[in-house]
Image (cartoon, rainbow over all chains, first blue to last red; front, top):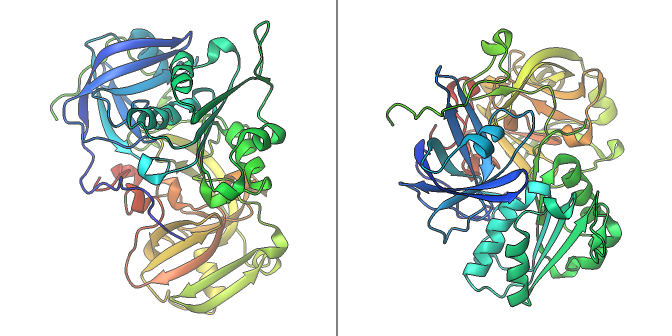
Length: 254
Length: 206
């Protein structure tokens, strides 16, 4: 099987472009969103990412990839960046970068981990930590298009303070009965926490996911061990491996 | 584009001089071994594993795990470069070179100029045969002396280290000779058809 299931196949070379920071949004104590004006932006699909390139005064350059958090319908391109303590690029993006600053960017990149309302559903999004970012672009796209496609977001965070975009998707879920948001907190739960505790396990997946018979479109994004665990559990539960799209980041622990 | 903008306060943190010449443009060194796969990790049992060599629809050779393990073994120490920007230096792999595989199939010459590698999980990647022969490519079964973990492509993965690492397809099961080059999985989704890290051929048209 080699079906191209997205329409994001580029026909032109991706050029480096200038992105200018229009706004910076504090999402959590270590996550910020950068709202970027990209003059020549050709549009993107939810789930795609960009490469950015920074240049130091001595000419040294570094490139990294970041998922796009904004839906295709938005005017500005939003990147949501988690500060990695010993990182080279993310501390600069989250601590040094100011409104008005410019850096180079190219994209959109990736034609596999994407979802559009035309691909229908039900939509099953499973995120660990900052793995929420490309999935948020899908939820925002679905919301902007008023698509009543049944959707589930299962989101694992360390603590309440670590949940990214909490108010926004709780807001979407309040006005949209076709979206269900389920949180689990793995390390610390506030007093009176009514949600799930601990890592996503087989029982939680079996309880909240659309059943395999409904052939949900499944997207799993997060740290490598998280994605390995969740996607293996889904296969064990009877979901078609080819219906599970994954994006892994960070150390593999192996 | 003109001169890139200088990012005030941004500076290099971890490029060691010693590794600089070994690092293709836009890459950084990691000591970790990140995993990037488009779907779940397949769990293929060794008793069900075979490797097939094909020309169009016809069979040129097929090996069970035991038969494959009995083929001549080669060890390669090499740097690997992922299109997502990480590079890992001095990794050691063991397996069967493409040259030895051709010999084992009784082929004196490769019967076509291109290969499509088919992998468990419906992954494919395309390669010119030139990039596999003369010791340039192998089917690897050991990493740092141990069986390759499933998440890293075990039981067997392609290893074509002079190209971006997506070309070193995990969970390889079938190599199909082709008369014409055709895009594989990522190559059809915006990535470069060839993928030379030293020319920074990451995406379509680079």
